[in-house]
Structure formats: structure tokens, C-alpha cells
Length: 138
Image (cartoon, rainbow, N blue to C red; front, side):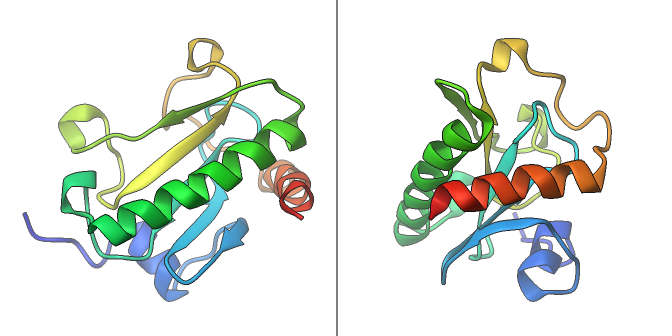
């Protein structure tokens, strides 16, 4: 499988497309999902060029999990929920809509969440959630 360098997440990593960022380090970026399943739905992506988890290096996978842990804690505080769902899809047949490794951190239970990638959220509302998550990371 060859990696598509023109996918939207690759463009975000290169700074060619904007996002509402809540966290970044040398190996990962976390930002608001523009088609959220719940208020505060945040994505964590590796900066490494990999489509699925099996294609990601062990170092990249470890970095993603470390960031996912930080984002879970911040999302729970920011959105005032006791739990969060972490979802990671591998391949379009599994429902992956962007061909770049990413993790969904969804406040609360996936059982009460909206369907995946169905409707765009208001950007100003997302910015408000991002501010709360950023504050909770500090």
C-alpha cells in the first residue's frame, strides 16, 4: 500500500491546511474533528507518513499513545465527562475516512455519539471546545 501524501492530514502536518489545534509535539498533532461525533471530539495523528496502525513505526505508535493519554485527560476535564472513547480504524473497509493513521478521542460513550463523519460542525463552537481542552492540558 502506498501512502497518499496529498491526504488532508498530510497537508495539515505540512501546514498547507488549517486545523483547530489543541496540542503538538515533534511526533504528533491533536486537533478538533470538524465532523465530530460528540462535543469535544478530538483527533490525534502521527506526523509519520503511515496510513494504518500496522504501518506505523513502534516509536510513532508509542508517541501517539502518549498523546492520546494526554488528550483523554484534557477532554474529560474540559467537557466535564467521566470517561472518553478512543477509536482507531484501520483501512477504508473498517470505516477509516482519511488514509492517515489517527485516533479519535470522543468524550463520553460511543454508544451515545453521533455517526462518524456525517456533518460539519460550526468552527466557532469547535474553537470554544479547543480553548477548554488547551486549558485542561496546562
